[in-house]
Image (tube, rainbow, N blue to C red; front, side, top):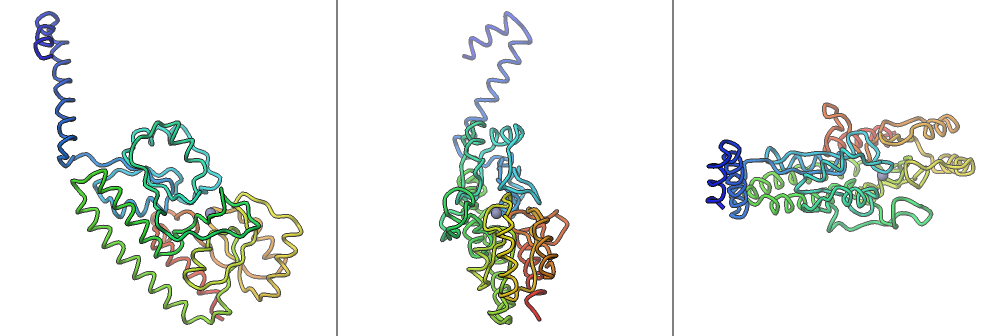
Length: 315
Ligand SMILES: [Zn+2]
């Protein structure tokens, strides 16, 4: 090949020289990759929504560049991908998704983008809960909101670290060090949540929210949940559903209703008005808040949600 290029150089001068340098460059790049030499360019990772993105950022540090498909305060249930998302995925080396049927729009996007990197399903290995039988939430009957239990968050972080170490083995040690430090913080917060709730009598630990996002949270931390709609954030309840909810609020002595950042607030406000029950604070379910706000990280989301709940559980 070199002889041929040199012959071209002889015939066509500068154009052939540029061609030769470009070929040599690509040969070196391939050799570098094949030998597993640590690359200096960051790993291109795509995360499907803001909560996963925060975990990926904690583990990946400066070794990655990260694109988030459904951003902060975004609703992953009603999301519609754009050509921009397909372009990001086309160039990605690794995709991190929740799984459990959460990202219904993802298979089509993956196919359209031609993505051929490592596909990491963060919820792999968690004990999946099922949704109530009367629901038409997501696809199938699995409850996808597993991140609302911090011990599942630990499983997510391990899966993310495994994925990064596989795609970029030269930095595996850094990924695992950061993952271990982060897991220690998640476990400390998990203990703090349990300690704080243990002081509240069980009968007072009841929460009512507008979509079934807190099943894992209630299951892990001993909180009884009443879901207003029992279906996805896009659903509209009937007048009969509202009437029965109002009955339930009165018989169960519910103190407060909670709004979620990615859900439609009108329904909750209407029920609060009709029952005289006050509105509790905003809870973060499927998306993080702006980065400078308390619920701007996965851990901060738990601290924030706990403050809102404790304020209403306490007499
Ligand atoms: Zn949800």
